[in-house]
Image 1: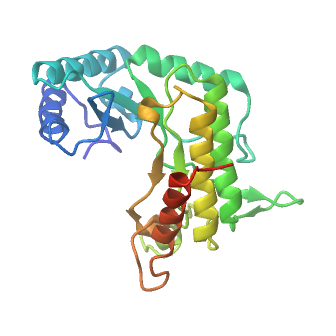
Image 2: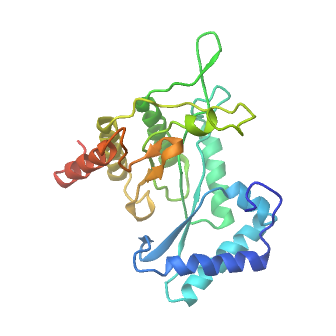
Image 3: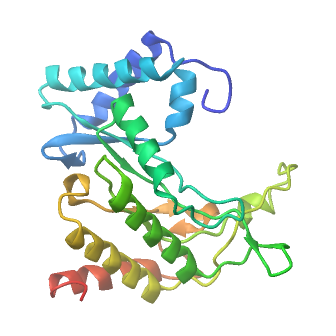
Length: 260
């Protein structure tokens, strides 16, 4: 409830949250890295603010690790998710120092790995400097893949690539009556199973080309059911099973030797 406001994660609240996490992290189907359950923090900057500073975050992560050890889980892997760094024109910022410095900050905070939820783009600029928002799906995927390379080159923490399953947030940004700010982001109305398949196979190629770079050799797909944000694989009346078919095509290709 507090991630947008002034609500604070006191020691007791954090400890209670860890008990809640452990309920799920101890389940047999919990995703594990090197035998330890994986948990991903969506927004580290908000965590720092609501816990009252970086030192408290480090203590909190250490507390969670200790709880997992005492619970017989052997510890845990705590990963941070963050959006891509961008330039004022909203293109991907390729300056190495920014990525490396942030990675070192996350490591200092006590995180074990890093990933992303999605790397959506706020706007594009035409030759006259005017904003526009329609952004092809393959371009959005290319943005993701550029982030993967910047991570491989500059991050000191293991990185689990974020794979793009689409982005079209117009149901929330332009249809919602409460959207008084006029906020917009780019949308990709042309997503296809074929581009999705190639994008997943590129993630597999990245994992092969960067052995040991990813925690657990994992890549994460955004998303299963973010319908109002346009990133989803669930079948719909409009698209049928096309995104699941794209995923299956990638898996089948991996079984037969994977990406060339």
